[in-house]
Image (cartoon, rainbow, N blue to C red):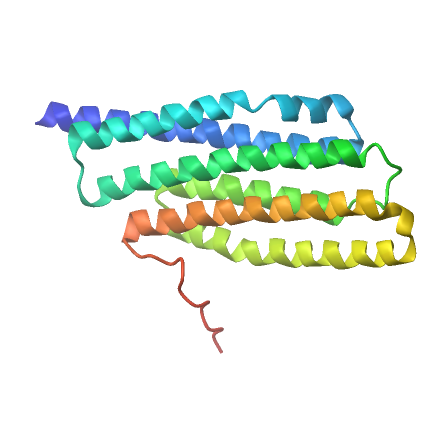
Length: 226
């Protein structure tokens, strides 16, 4: 029995390591896509568009590891929640990889036009989204609900910046109708970054459920204290 428990824990640690590797790849692809936009680096953007295969391969591998653990060990309680969380996190990370490709494709279109404006808010959104992703995965590995809750609170900042980008670019388009196409691509990029934050939030919510068995997905926001 002790050997079975030890082997299960080793397999669970290996699963977590693969998820962290996948998260690192997803985060780097988001960083590269935004950086390619800012520097107007065609080659970097193209690498992001064509480099989705490693994340897709890890997506399949992690699912396989999760289903094998469920079938062989029939875990209960916290261990079961850990594996279910891993399945869901795996899906979120794969979608983050897809969103990085979407950002790169929009960036590729954008750099075919003269710059609409200096890019300030979108790079900041990229940094926040990457940090949320990193912190949510750290919270998963460390079973840290406090860090997971910090990720949830960061989502509001990302939403506010997305709204700011939209309003700013809408004003630019009203002033100059020739920039509509590239401005719309910037708005699209801001929406993709906001969605990446949503996936990081999903991961954080899964961490809280995994550790405390508390489903916070549809709870109302906490009331401010006096």
